[in-house]
Image 1 (cartoon, rainbow, N blue to C red):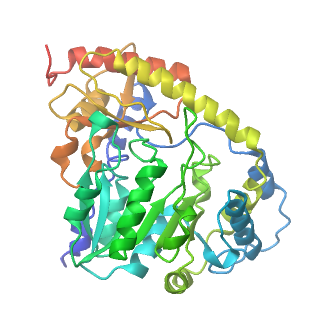
Image 2: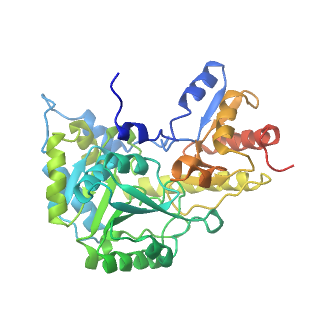
Image 3: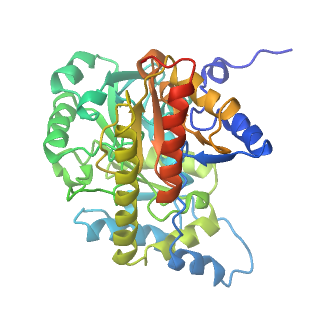
Length: 400
């Protein structure tokens, strides 16, 4: 039998989905599983987005332009302009989710073996996208002790080599929920300028910032506008993950033209998804105010509950709807699997994403797991109770 490609062998399993078979078996056994492993909000999609699809009078579901509907691209550009950023339609490419935007950007900017610096822990699929594009990921560890703040500029400088091509950040962060400050981003901007690097910024959670903090976009930095490649998505902002619509935004004409070749090769982004995205642009601010309030309440319930469990280390995230938690266990992946295979509390158990998948070196996240607080508060309270009971019973508990 012919061998698989090296890329196929190196491609990691998703830590977010790898335990799905165990969760499915737990459900077959009659257990209630609280799914805290995946960022699938239970918030209703805006009616404006749903109506845009329901009320369409299309007779043929045609291809669209490879860069997306012109009027949708203009609508997205206006969305950014309303936030104060100088973005025009020709800077916006509609993609099949934010994932494709990142893939197009990687393939347009990197040669095989060139290096991408990413503060870690980071969104697990960045590893997979990098492998597919032949990129070497160079991680800079951040610490749970300070809530996963941006590593020092000195640490970035240590990692830069002649092969360094770009830095990638997620703001607010997945999996940590950390929200970068203006001061941190300005420091990052100076590194990008000094070494003439690309700056990839995943800003799909920008609408969800808490405790009076404001999101600062890299689109503000006019002096590095040629260096910036923004990745965006409707999935989390409007709770419409299944639409599979994202965007690549850049004012670098060469990068946009290169990405366009890849866009043409895949023909076009989803037509119905774009219609939903177009409708979503009409979503009133009251929707985001309500959703943000709900996420803050969920976060507070979760964090308070987790911090009351002996041995658990849990930062207070400033945005998105994730938190990386350190548990008093020998191995968080084994713990997560044990929760699904061997444990229940009153017929209930919890599914989390093992933290090792969010690091290049799995040992660094060995005791951590990502929790997505995307369930109702009552479910989160029950999930925390399950974890409290489970940690008292788990054979690999590391505190007495």
